[in-house]
Length: 161
Image (cartoon, rainbow, N blue to C red; front, top):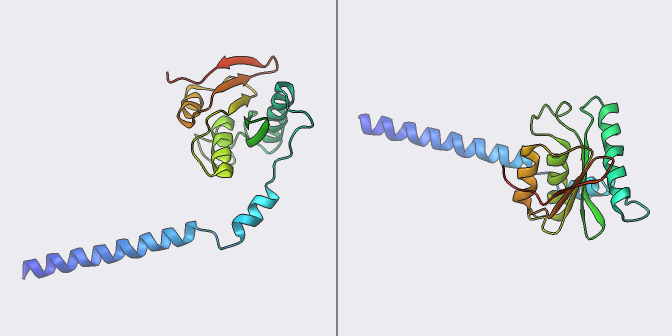
């Protein structure tokens, strides 16, 4: 009798987990076409000239935009082969995400757009020196070089603390 109760209890829990997992899976996937619409409205405007000055200026534009939207004043872009492939201002306050630093969000954006977590050969431009968390994320993403600030200071390749 105890076995039957135990087994039916496990079966009930398994059933619940299957239904819960399916619900989470289905709610986390956008309908067909939604991704395409998101990408079209989410196009990155490239600077007129591909240069360190232009890329750091874009990071500062994103910094201003983040502040105007009520978030912390930070901005970052990820560049690969002379093209901006990811960008973001700070998302800490707007998304209530303590990891939503501009650099982290720009790396996430680049990975999403490129369909790969590996961003080898990319350069990270930030309005300020990346914190240890952001530098570690750049390291794990394979970013090759980091520059920050108005003086376009070369922070070198990312490393783990």
